[in-house]
Length: 123
Image (tube, rainbow, N blue to C red; front, side, top):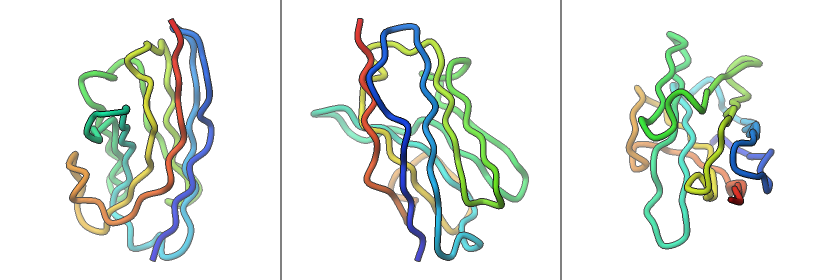
């Protein structure tokens, strides 16, 4: 099992920045990729960004490309999401998720997830 705990959310004005962090514990060696998803009230959870550990590759959704950056450190146990130029439409609860094979953008492909951290961007 893998446990994920997110932190770093908060309230920020449009144009501001936040850095989310996700701390993983347990069988982290079994995790092949980690990702950030977000979910706004009344909407489905959507992919934001992911990182594949063995090759260090990253991928961001078009809606955040150029503004958000995913990174990882500390031997697969920490993942960050640097969010710049935040917009009101970025307001959502952000979830850190992990999977044990390959990587992808579908939430159903992920095996582990945390409780999430709330990000609110005011206009």
